[in-house]
Length: 122
Image (cartoon, rainbow, N blue to C red; front, side):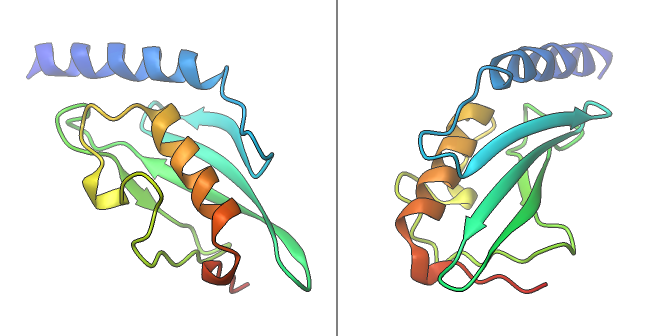
């Protein structure tokens, strides 16, 4: 298991280094920072018909990452509902090898392409 932990930490460090270069094509998703090497936080700027709001989305990396796919969890600050129509893949299809940049890019595309699917509860 110690070998797995080393691989895991190396993978996370590499991913985070890449994420620092992340830029969202439409400005909707912004990479903020990592937290204790297990969470990666994105700030999503949601612009609705009547208001705009910022929601923080935390991508939790499992302890055995990269051997289990990362989970998307949304804190109580906001709720984003998915109808399963992410443009490239669904969150459930993300593999352990899926890079964080890919995941955030897909989130970004999803948020910009499906105005009617964005449900925000504050």
